[in-house]
Length: 191
Ligand code: FNR
Image (tube, rainbow, N blue to C red):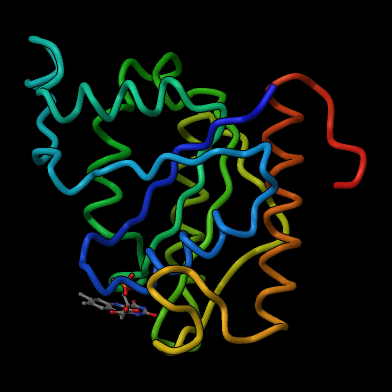
């Protein structure tokens, strides 16, 4: 069967480089993968006391999207050497009860683009620690730290540079295999 992936982008601004990168990745993926970009900028700020009466409406919608996904693709900027508050808020909302929530066991891959040369490496190290705690099998390689100038990837996800394109194609082949492995224990032969 085909595989469904929920995409989280850690930036909500219209000109987001990371949204462009996420679009590029989804365009390069095998047709067996389908994608939903989850909206996370309308989730309220997390409040533990609001878990008791059921999720607020936008959180309930987000929960359903994550629950329905076979895997997750998270593409985030680095803000002050960590992940963005927007992304952390989304991760926190679905993180209870610990060890038995919407994240638990879902295969995930992470990537990030920055206007700086370190390409979100510090943010992704933090993110790996969080995803480990959430018990999500996180793809180890290839790592994707992109130093993006605005013209390298268009807002529609078209890539101007062939080396970058080949690298991201390889990343998505591995991601496909990663999700497939965790869903039914097999991998596509060419991955
Ligand atoms: C940044 N930026 C940034 N870049 C980086 O490589 N490391 C960092 O720690 C930070 N910190 C940071 C903090 C804040 C508050 C802002 C506004 C920006 C720059 C960042 O890479 C740049 O704004 C990207 O364009 C953000 O990604 P999106 O929104 O384009 O996807």
